[in-house]
Length: 164
Image: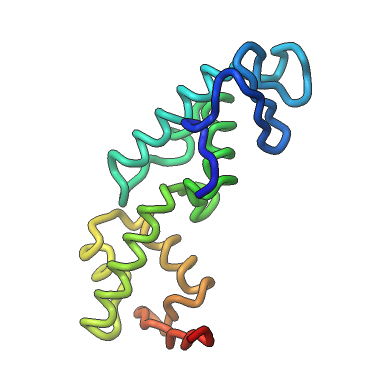
C-alpha cells in the first residue's frame, strides 16, 4: 500500500509531487517560506478531516466545493488522489477508493442478479443520489465494467485471466 499522510513522520522529510514535508517547515511549493504553502500540521489535519468526511457517507460524498474549501484541503485531497486513497469520479465528485470498490461490487452483483438495470434501479439499490450514480456509471462504462444500452446498463463480459 502506498504511504498516506497519517504514516508520515513529523521529524523525517518526505515529498509528494511539488509538496515538501518536514516537521518544522511549511509545506510550500519549493519555497523555504510559507507564502503559497501550508504547514504540515494543517495538511495532516486537512487529510484526516477529508478521510473522516468521505467515510461518513461513503456512497454519497459531499460536493467537491464542500469537500475542499481551502488550500490545505485542496492539497491534501490531491495527495489522497495521487496515493490512491481517493478517486476522482468526475470534476465534481471524489470518493474514497474503498467506497468506489464497494459500490462497483454492489452494482456488478445487482446487474448479475437482475440482468439489465436502469440508473434509477441501480441508484436505489446502492442508496446514493443521481449526482453520484450517473458519473459513477459513466466511469464504469469507460472502464469496461458496464455497458450502456439506451436507458439500461449491462455488465461487459469479464475477461478471463491469462494467469493460471
